[in-house]
Structures are given as structure tokens and as C-alpha cells.
Image (cartoon, rainbow, N blue to C red; front, top):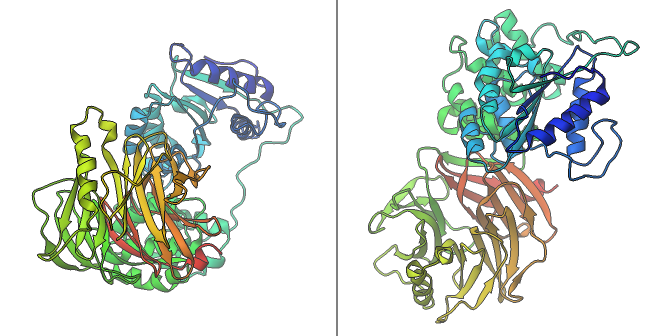
Amino acid sequence: MTGADGTAAHAARSLLSWAAASGDPAGTAPRTAVVTGPSGAGKSRLLARFVAGAAGEADPGTGTSAAPTATRPTVHAVGLAEGQIARTLSWQLGRHLGYGPVGPAELLRRLAADPRPVLMVVTDLHRSGRGPSDLPAARPAALVEGLIAPLRSLPNVRLIVECDTPVLLGTGDGLLVVPLERAADGPPAPGTPPAQVTVAPAPGHDWRSATPDEREHALDRALATGTAHELLRDPGYLVYGSVPAVTAVLGDQRVPAPPGLREVWATAAPALSAPDLPDTQRAAVLHAAALAANPRLAEYLRPLAESGPWVTGWAHASRPAAALALTGTGPATGAFVAADALGRLTRYSLADGRALTSLPSGTAWQPSALAPVTSDGLLALDRSGVLRPLLLGPDALLPIGSGSLLLHHNAAVLAPDPANLPTALAATTRHAAVGDGLGRVHLWPLDSPATEPRTTLRPHRAAVTAVACLDLGGTLLVASGGRDGTVTLGDSATARPLAEPVERRDALPTALALADTDAAGPVLAVAWSDQRLHLWHLLSGRRAALPAPYGLRSLALTGDARLLSAGTRGTRLTRLDLAALWA
């Protein structure tokens, strides 16, 4: 199916008409449109205007400002395919869709389960490919086969692809071809720009002051001269160099690499691919990934990592945890307790993460949250919604108010409405906060008996996914995250959340932590399902964003700004420079 008119205005109208028709589940319009034409015909300009118009910023036909209308399509993700392979382009698309930097298999799995009709734009498909020229990954066809074709097969996905020829995508009725022609009086087609650097810089080059061209193409040029293995031994290049290039080259087992580098890169590269990651944080990401797999590389990177706003103190990828909690008292508590997927409890040193002792945990259970209420007493939440007491020593006790809390919420297990079941738990020594499936947060006193919650907040329109609380004087400050993609703040004094959420995103908050820090006062940490970690300075409303190394399920924050995090791929401690984070 092809549009005959090659003018930009006609192409823009064709795309808008196609987007409207292809969005009809009962329609027969093709689910893929390909914008083709020679170099200089304006393909990229057309797609930029289309995306801007979808966001209500400009009319896709004229480029002029325009208000959003009901017929204007929504573009959910944009992928810049030039120089990318399937894995790195998947990281781009996953970020835009709210999944985080996920690989092709996970991207396709999540899209298949996504209830939305999803529209994506992929530019410069014909310029895709990276790595050794004799491997398939260096050619655009590999990206088509590994990602674009599987995306086209999903019934809820619509694609607009920029390509110099539709042949790359195949033929058939499932494709709308939108051709563009360069105007007769238009500018000549640009050729390939001359390379700024014809020889790859040698290892030890000052990559911090390197040009963008040197950073992006140094490894490509080293491949051509047979010196790629030397560049991969340069830690400076790994910090500043091209993530797609390194990812593609390390995928070729013929290229020699330092011991452990492939493992380090596989862990770090998704986070390194974030477009807004500062150089010092790139060093911190690599340093964290190298701590176990390549200690020599980690030690080399440590000074640069420590010059940034955060650095990993220790990381144990072999110790995944479903939930964790600080134990002891005071801002510099020296230990924490972690529960694995079977509910087995271990106490660890906060200083270096080493295991101290195994703890009694009773029969196997599925932990969702741990909340310390005394020095050796915890409240715990099972994934089934059952609350349980955990006594970590023979003389351990729970506060007087915990019994009523347990009886009240565990009675919901017998109720006909499962939405009343607890879904999140947090506590201080004086209070507990319990979230449920109806978006409510129930606040309980622990230092006095009560048969009902003292206060119930209603901050969310869907189930609560995480909650944190902090005693501030006589008031309990409560943060909660919900399946509606919001994070809210409330307190026991006003008995209601703030009028507006602290944050609203197209992702789910998976873990929260609150602490009254020595350097900055109250700080809120939020882990998101798309592998983002946000730190909020509550007194000023400033936010700092950090890359999370994997999906996080539990957080704890100390008064001296140490952030403990855990998930299915390990546990780690991050030291934060709060002043630098918000500078």
C-alpha cells in the first residue's frame, strides 16, 4: 500500500490518517508505516514534526504550534536506530514505555501484556547496526529480524519507521509506504560527513576532553585497524565511550576482552545507556558493577566514582533479597536484616555487607516487607496479605499496639473483598502504616493499644505498592506509592495527603524510604519499576535521579545518607553526597 504524492504535506496527512485508522481495533489498516525517500527529502524532519504534533507542540504538516486535539495520535516511544543493535534500541524503547532499559525478549513480553494500543516511531533504520563488519549485527537486517519484525507481529503495536527503502521491512499488505521526494530546488542530498578523526585514539587518551565524535566512533575505527581489544583495556574509554559500540563489540567472542569485562558490561550497560547520565555517574555505575566481577577495574574507577554525588560502598549480587530492614537505633545503625524469597532471615553488617548470623523465621513464607519496631522485633508482610510478628531473639518483644494491628488486618483474609488485604507496610518505634488494595493507608499507634487505626488516608485510586513513615516530633510523616503511578505525602496531624502527588509517572513505585538526614533533613527515596531511583529533598522540593542497577523491591535510608537497596539481583549499599545531588 503506497501513497503516490511525495510532498511533505501529503506525507504528513497520510501519516495522520493512517494513525487514526490503524488505532481502530476493528479496522483493517496496516499496523506499520514506513517513511522512505532519498537523503535530503525531509524524512527526519517529517517524523520530528509528527512526534511534536502528537505531544501538542507543533502541527505535523506545517511545524507551527497547535493545541492537542482528539484526533492527534499519542506516540508512546521513539527509537533512534542509527548505530544501534537490537539490544540497545530495545533499551531506548523500554525507557519511553515505562518498562526501563529491558532487552528485546522482555520488551516483547511486556508489550504483549500491555493493555494499551502502543504507537512507536523508529528513525534511521537503514543506518542501524554496529560491531565487526563481518557479523550480522553490523547490518540493519539484524535489527529488523531481532526486534522490528517481532514488534510488527504484536497486535497492539503500531510502528512508524524511517528507512531509505521499504524493501528492508519486506513487502505485503501489512505495510503503508509513505514516499518523500527531494524538492527540485531543495538542498542537495548531504553525503557522509568527513570523519573528524581518522585514527582511533590510543589507550590512555584524555577521554574527558574528547570530542563527541571521538567518544562515539573511536571503537568503530579501532575495529577497522584491529586495535579494538586495546581500547577495551582502557578504563577511561569504558567510562566515556559509546555504549552501543562497546555492547556490540563485546558480543563478538573473537575480540579479546579483560577478564570479567563482559560480565561487568552486561550488568552496567543498560544503566549506562541513559541519555542524561553525567560522566561521574557513568563511572559510579561501572564501579558498582565491577566490585565483584573485576576488582582491579573497580579500584581504578573508584576515585572518579567518588568525585560524583554517589558511590557504591559494597554490592553482593549473589544475595538477592525480597525485603530488608535496618535494625538497632540511631542514624548510624550498624546492621540490617534481609529476607530471601523463602522468608529465611539473615542479619548483615551495614559496613561491608558480610553475613553476621542466621535468624529464626518459622515456616517458609513469601516476604513483601519488613518493618522494625523494636531492636529485635519486626512486623512483616507476606505477599498473600498476611501480617506476622518476627522476634529475632529469645528476649525480643513487640510494642503493645502491635497485637491489635495484626488482629485487625489479618481478619481481612477472611473477608469477601480481597482489596481490603494489606499490600504495603512500614513502621517506626511508635507508629505503623499499612497500605491496602483500595489505595488507603491506615496509621496505627504502637505505643498504646487501639482496636482501630487512629487515622486512615486515601491517597491513591488503586492499590498501594509501597509505604514509608517517619516520626517528626509529634507527627507521623507518611509517604506512599500506588499502582496509579503516583507518590504522595501525608501526615497524622492533618489526616489527609497533600493536594497534589509528589510525583506522577508512567511507571510503578516499587519501594520507598524516609529518613531525617543529618545533612539535609527529611529525604524521601523512591524506587520505580523502570529502574529509576529518585531522591527528594522534602524541605525544598528538589529531586535528584539516579539509575537503579536492577528492579528494586526494598529500600532503607540512614540518617548519615547511606542507602540500602535490594532486589532479585542482589543487595548493595550506596553512599550519598546529598548536597552534591541537588546542586
